[in-house]
Image (cartoon, rainbow over all chains, first blue to last red; front, side, top):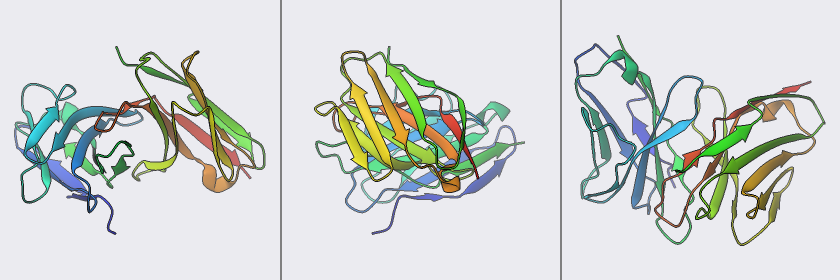
Length: 114
Length: 112
């Protein structure tokens, strides 16, 4: 059973460009979460999605950031017009969505904005 | 609001000794408390978790205790080994589907 997959693993963008991060949850998992980790810091929740629905986006900046989890394909976190402060590791986690809430993390995408 | 305080921020122990990390939280509705281990440049890995209906859980050299009245929970690692060196994060969550709120992390160094 493959774990949570993320790509790309590393992404370099210049200021003003768009970054698109992808996440494929574990097989059988229908809940996806995105977290951001700044260097030497903890993980901060951004957004929680189920198939075709955003359930909680309370941690995601209102501007430039968007997320989706279409019926087919991976979940995508999109950052428009990136700035240097967006440089971080972005982790996706998935859970089966049963009464338990174990979340399993992908390897992360390390975004560097030049 | 939701907040998790984690202490200490760094912990250095001699191989074979025990390590204890403590977390306190503010949201009394939380009922799920996982611990993650993150090695440098790697993903956070779930190492143990506890739910609010139990006070203690053990898995080999790792144990977690929960005091819901006092709103704190702790991770205990016994007989530490060099491979236990990593950053450990506590977190809290609610029912299925709830986001996790993480502590600031504890950098553990096990000296051989």
